[in-house]
Length: 635
Image 1: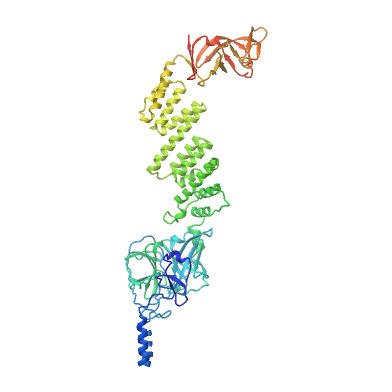
Image 2 (image 1 turned 45 degrees about the vertical axis):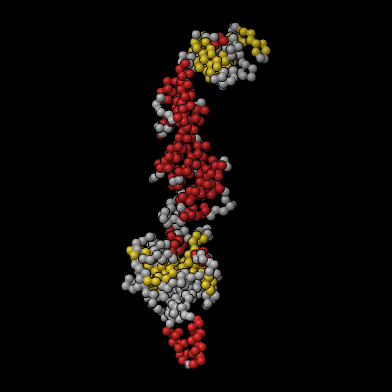
């Protein structure tokens, strides 16, 4: 058999052997022609000696020459040895098997003198997945009737199996024999095809065993197997010598076992019936359905095969949906390209691309607790949580992360550190977002949840101090600040908070109005008559408080001809405004009673009122525009 794919298996492709029978190019060192099975072992006869002998015989004794030629040929014949397939078990214990390399069988064609000839068909099994992609190629010897042995692991995920015999000959493998415990299966080409080869026989412990590699000039070697274990149809063991090649094992010229080199360690001895009695017990289609069909691995296979016509988002969704289906393969059986770590790496790469493109909503909508728990990838979880936080809020992101972690059986130390830092960032951002919205109640709730989950987090603790200061509660701020020891890296931040606390202490007993530093525009909200909120602008140039007409109506104040009228000069000109009396104005908890006010809609600001001197004059006033603070101390 000749096949360009074999050069992958036999890497020394610069050296070849040409078969004298069919002229096929074979890898250097091959025992057999990969096309016709002809023995390629070098003869040990000396050509020059034969020529001299021939001349001598021709000159002196022609008849004796003819007689000696016949004897030499018949006396040195050796024949093909039979070989058998084993199945592919897990790494078993070692067992010793011995092979007799002198055993000869009068089958197949005769070879040149002093050369053992074994005619064994060799083919290339090509296994393709459901998408048509080749997932494995392995050279195999064939036993009589077209039986080949294949490692179980190589067959998993294969929906189409083909035996290639030369460049133009391909045969479908349709069924075989394999037990649940076997790591190797015995498989046969399609029933209407006959491929001649050594007959398959079960192993006999009393008979010596030999081993012969497919690509070697060496003669069959006696071997022993250590620590044999019977599993299903095969006896599995380890050769006493390090024969790390694809090879066959023989007993009395019969095919009884296999080695698979780097594909599967160990030796595998057939323990079933003779090959002529064997019939397939399971179809390849059924083997695929039982071991791989409708599984997580099958979904991953389809996702990996998605071409350029699919978007990154569609690929991500296909991978993620695979985690919604139970796997059928163990971690040891799963091919490298379908293992969880490989798929997660693909998903992380796609997620990074999508987030960079602004597709946070789409990413957040794909992932849920089930998918992320099954994926069990902390980096992927954090990426999905960030997308969730951006679209649905920090609390949803925290809940998602908590739920996934609760479903994980194990988290290593490195991931534990990552998660602690990640949670800290989520909580800090949540507290800060609530604070910026001036929703202090929500900020305090986030802070308390964060403190329970991360009680030793200094950054979160200092946010609590800031919240207390925002409520002008210097006592709470001072108490919180004193509860922790702080690293030198936070020294400036701590000093700043201490200064704010001291400033609040100094402001105790005063009304504190904060405004934008560097401006003289001072807005505030007051409560009128203990029930109505009104926005004011502090105006030291206004002699009286003003309120909008709509506010006067809301307060139920009578505004008619009986009200005193005051002349007011505004930016829009001179106006006349009725005067009313407010029973109280309350600012920051300080209430002042019986304040006169004018009912006046300010030009372009009809919803605002002015806080004039008839109110401000009741306080000692200190305005610091640089800091943006106004203090009102009752007289």
